[in-house]
Amino acid sequence: MIEKVNDLDLVLPFIRKYFLNFRYDSNPYERMFCYKKNNKIIAFISYSIIYERAELNYIVVDEKYRRKGIAQKLLDFALDDLKNNMVENFSLEVNVNNKVAIKFYLKNGFEIKTVRSNYYKDSDAYLMVLEVK
Image (cartoon, rainbow, N blue to C red):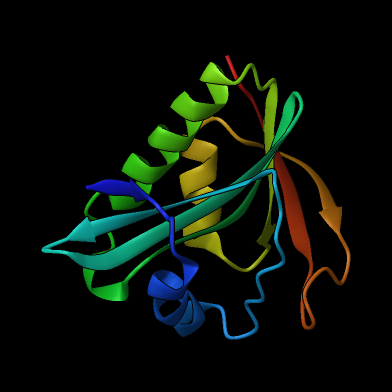
């Protein structure tokens, strides 16, 4: 079940498990949702809508629940929200070494637009963009 995150303190332990340096700065454009199973958070998505553009901040599924379609459900949920908010394109950065994520985004219609050199401490990132229809 996908739920809006109303209390960040409830999802922080899950987020920090995967993003050690996660810091939350109040962002009026950011939307956060979690996926729960048996009342336990097993996945999380965060994206920001800035007028006609949106940016994916985070998407993660607990290791035990991967390859079960949960990331797809979260992405589909976000895309429906973006369409309802008249968003024209959705962008993200992904580590060039993260082959699983790149394949997932390509399968969902994202296109690699450019390489961002040294985006991460130890590697480059692809800027990927999806035209929202």
